[in-house]
Image (cartoon, rainbow, N blue to C red):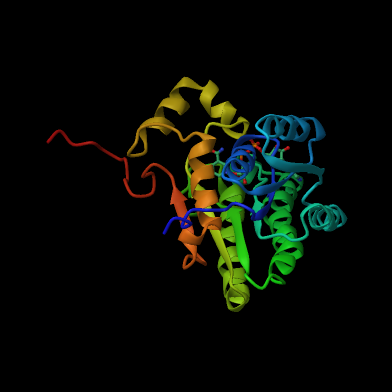
Length: 262
Ligand SMILES: NC(=O)c1ccc[n+]([C@@H]2O[C@H](COP(=O)([O-])OP(=O)(O)OC[C@H]3O[C@@H](n4cnc5c(N)ncnc54)[C@H](O)[C@@H]3O)[C@@H](O)[C@H]2O)c1
């Protein structure tokens, strides 16, 4: 029981570690005794994350890589193996959103969102998943879906479709790697206070609506997504695979349409 939530000595590749949720996961995994290969395509942001984690004397290396480029992800895998000898956990985090109605979306914008959210996640799962599957003890893969995989608002067509796709990628890889004890799950957050949704926070009406819409009446902090992320890599989650876990303050539970005076 004492080791139920222990990830110490496990090696995690955390992508999107330069900002927001990925940065919080890198910190949380390292703070709980894990070894972290932090990765991002933005070298300055990545360097900042690595320096901050090292300040706490936690175990971390940084590898600059664009997760939409296969050669970069192969190099990321090789550098992780070179530093720590194996990979136990993958966090496939980077994602983007372009909020526009379908009729206004350009095909180039469609390709950009799909390229990062769906193909980038797929490349990470394929290249690093096969490495995790080599471990006798298996491992854990966590991808980033969203409440937008299930419930939408105008302007979320392409983002929502990619996030539903990411959830299906996780379920499929869970089926394919289960016999090797590799568990694959998706986290589906509601609003999390990161640069990705800064535009909403700047719009008072949009922000108010988005905070009042869930049961907890607020956005999440990145740390509140990092908790479930680290949990999914721990022995406590040993029987969880193929799941889409909504970390949304109750957004998808409460319809939020009306609060009757009772
Ligand atoms: N913030 C939210 O409200 C929210 C809600 C639900 C889901 N999500 C999902 O969580 C994930 C992380 O979101 P966030 O809010 O932390 O975003 P963020 O914009 O704060 O951070 C994303 C990070 O990914 C990096 N990145 C972007 N493209 C990359 C690439 N091609 N290769 C490597 N790194 C790349 C960026 O440099 C950045 O450091 C995304 O998949 C997002 O869709 C976020």
